[in-house]
Image (cartoon, rainbow, N blue to C red; front, side, top):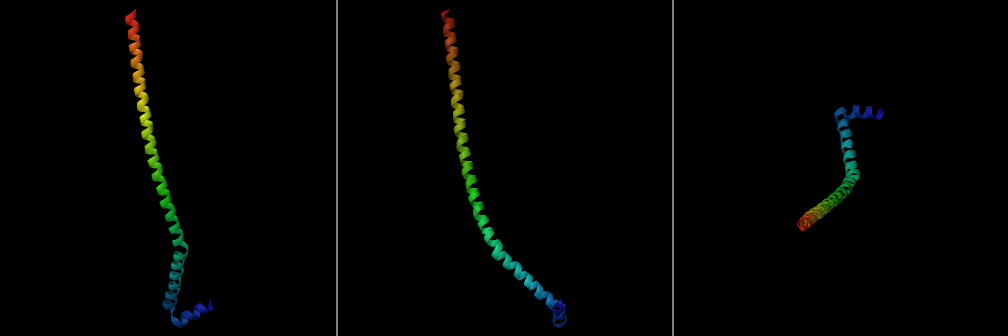
Length: 97
């Protein structure tokens, strides 16, 4: 604390404060470049990978939905054919009587 008071007395408060702010800015810059940037780069790579997986899953869901729709259409056609066949069989029975 005595050294700080001596520096202020010798160089003045604005100069000491400017040096302190310069050190603070250097410390923040060093922290960002050494700690945060590598982690952000790694996170960006993971994000791209996850987005690609989501796109693939979306494509799979679209293909699956089209297959389900096709199966449902075939079932509906089969039911209509079965109903028509049953109706025809009933009509033939009624005509025989």
